[in-house]
Image 1 (cartoon, rainbow, N blue to C red):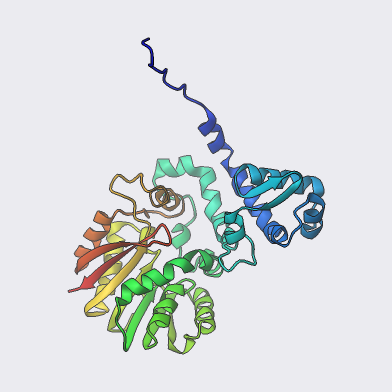
Image 2 (cartoon, one colour):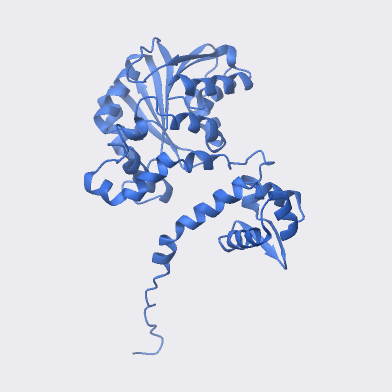
Length: 342
């Protein structure tokens, strides 16, 4: 071997072991959120005895949990005391306006976790093992929890989506928000345009959450609910824009095309349909968060997927839309796909 030639680094099993024990990371974070550990840290001091008292937990348990959270980068430790990292202070301390700790209730829901215990069977069969239509089963209560707990995660994406949809337009507008969930996206459009009126479609218990959010945002008088399935209810209209946020990925392409055709029929000529989606690159393995979302859809739906822009563009065109463009959201892993009714 010549001078300067380096031997190739030997492969390590570390990634295998880290992946097989990754469930411990999830469990540790969920436990810390349940114990309100991050608020206790922010209030200080961060010694074990004080944290144990404020969290009503054992000193041994708090010490080991805090050490583990330090190992994975969510806390800092100096001598025998613990403190926030910038990430935990901003996103996990319940006193922070940007706190997203509530998302653990939805992301940790057994209806979403249990299928992964049967992933080999799901891969063999190509669809979820959940009964019926999985998470898209009519009236599935998981979406009430989504509406309650996922708003903090979605909120940073609402303003960019509103700007893309409105594109500077003012004056009277009628907006249809399909699968509205927490309602934040339609609410944001109404906030950006004081003359916009929103019609929100979702299951009735979900719309109760959305309507309360609209009332708290000061747009309740311009926010109307239309309970039922987006595939079955009569939309009315004509609308200036239709929002389809975090929705198309639950279904196969023919179903998406059918829904987009129905949305197209409800729009004014020149109206726009805006879908908020995880959109992987054409290689389907990047960027990581958008590309990996396909596995969530495999586990929880009969036929859902994370679609590339070229796939979404074909669906839009088949439904009658033109001038189809992609707008990555700078505040999150999503992309807004915008199409215009011809």
